[in-house]
Every structure is written in C-alpha cells, then in structure tokens.
Image 1 (tube, rainbow, N blue to C red):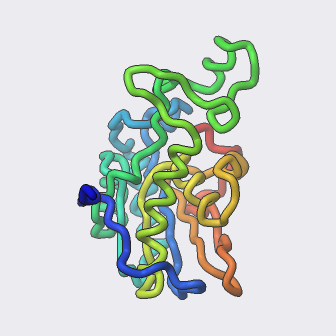
Image 2: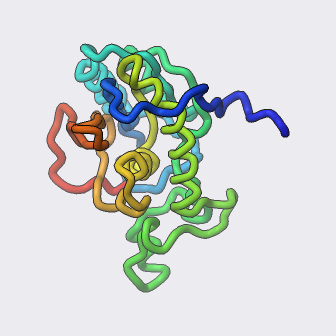
Image 3: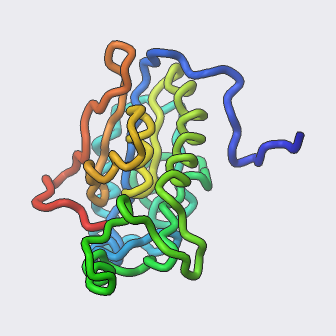
Length: 221
C-alpha cells in the first residue's frame, strides 16, 4: 500500500466523543478580490491594508486561547493573516479554498447575467477553466480529512484553522454532521473569527462570524 502524503497525516487514534478543546476558525483578511465580491479560489491574492488590520484584530480576539495546533492554508492571504494574528501556523495544503475553475475571478452577478438564472456555487457548481474546478462534495472530502486530523487534537487543547470563506463554511457543515450544502446558509466575513465546540457530546457552534465590525450584509465571497 502506498504511503499517505506527508501533508495529510491521519491520527493514531480516533477522535474522542466529547473533546474539551475549541475549534477556532479564522477567515483571512480582506483582499481586493474579496472586497469586490470576486470568487477567489486558488489565485494567490495579498491582503489589503484593511485586510491586515482585520487580521490583527482577529489576533486580539483569539489571544486567550490555548492552541495545541494551528493550521493555515498555503495561500498568501491566509498565511499572512495567521502571521499578523500572532499565530505560528503549520501549512496544510488541504485548507486551500474551493477551486472555482472557470468562475475564478468572477462575481456572482456577472455569472448570473451570463447564464440567465440565479446561479450559486453551492446549488449549481462550477465549470472547468484554467483549473479543473471542484464539486461541493470534493471540497467536503478535503474538509473531512482536515477534521479527522484535528478532532483528536482537541483533546489536547484548542485548534485554529486559518483559511477561506467557502472552505470554512463547508468544513463547518461537515463538523456539524450536516450536508455540505448547509454551508450556503452561513456566511463568513473577511477577518472574522468563529468557534466550534461540543455541547453534551454534540458538535455545536459557540460563536459565528465574530469580528471587530458587525456585518451589515452577507459576504459576497
């Protein structure tokens, strides 16, 4: 049997049924593309100055957590967010954003005008482009691999994941043992912090989309 890739280690023991640690999710700070509502998957976009401020603010929000493990997407916007938040993160390639394929760099409004109906990535999926694109289920499979590694670590302390809006929404659905498309019903703003935990042996949301500013409208990307 071939060895598993080094970036995708599985634990030596299964997850406990009621770990005491918290799973802290940090969405990266603002980029020019996220500000404009462009689908930003694998394109490596830096943070804006405001995005860097949001990352520092996220660091203040998580300063009191006792992290036993911190993982970051390899993309610059996530790694920089972790750095500015004061977190020493290990890069995990599985934490990259949804591969939007042919819809990379485009707004939902633009795609809907082209197609002539109310398209959404969660409902209708994406198309092949410069990259192959991913289905919702393929993103959920990556999220499941991450959680299989992360959940046992919650028995040792808190865990932070620094990643992307759509990926973290799908990961949360998997964590809650719901269908991946539940992620369409929970939005995440740039620089926000969310906390997942267990409540009476059940996975639960402790706080969601928390930041230095309350959102006035759903995030567009």
